[in-house]
Length: 346
Image (cartoon, rainbow, N blue to C red):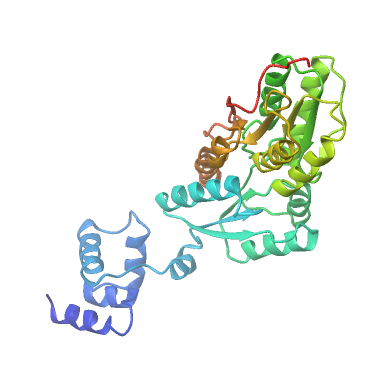
């Protein structure tokens, strides 16, 4: 080991080695080290090799912020998400982080605590202040897209929007097709009085699932029950279920997500109903717990991990000026379990 190298490694016990340490030990300028780090073709192979050997020897790790000053590239991508505690966004976010890291990018994430417009703008501005090179929006709410338009965001942007509104780079599971699958399944089982427990009005996914339900009901020429607007929670599903058992003018329910379906099952069983003999229930998402509900839940499966992986691929293609990535919607899958059964006239 060279004496100078030993001195740097001794100093590293107090501070981390920096780019100027590398330059001094390699006998080059720090600008040359920077060019090596950024794979410049103007560096002679022998010089590049010498710099790399020093980097390995002293354990230098390039500072992301410092590299951004030199290259005008932050190598950071922003993600705006709704509630990362929920299975769908959390699973997509994990896949995004893994795919970004493999591509040499960092992820800066911010979650919407409130859905009011000022909070959305504040979160978007926070990401922009991180000098992110591109952004992924896993918060499919109408107000979010209004804020993006108002702020005139110019960096590459990928949205998880099943309707494709105002966003040339949009990726999602086909929510409308999934809702049609769920509704058609109930119709094919002989159910003619079907209720839809919908998601919140401002959510694009809720709107798409409601549209798929209504389209399929109309196609079958069945009576339309007014959709019930929920809030995605099992608690709301439980209270909605308690109200519905007082009417019993239906034989099946399509819930817009699995959590609300869980609340429904609880309320129906508490009322002494035999599920699925008396009432069939279909959910949406296929969260890991859905197969352990009682009865196990028939639901529409979304591949949230694939959404995350493909959103990064699309965003990086946009950043690098490539447009070859497939933007076609990801098709959902109907998972048949024990919460649905053929209609039985009593």
